[in-house]
Length: 146
Image (cartoon, rainbow, N blue to C red):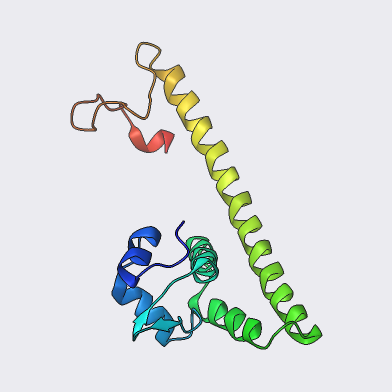
């Protein structure tokens, strides 16, 4: 990754729009980006932090929590700031673990359904690439096996 990027290059590298990068800076989601001749210059530090913010967003962390994290980060590495950032991340990680457990349970249930349907129609095992509902034959009582 280059050490200095324009906002257009940073947008391309992150998958965000230039408008979104400016907005994130405006609402305090990312630190103010240094400027050279009035133009934003995104360096490695800025890009690494934007990637971290994007990871948090991808996990569903609410914007207000990310903003709180950024505010605490700006306070520096005081014991209170470190504790609060850690607590925020611990809560979010616990939430993600709950989501993962729920997804794992759902996958098990779906796999059970796939096995059931496969046993009901030995000649046509359902697969992700199965025919569309319009062309596939339906069981005589679809509600029975829901």
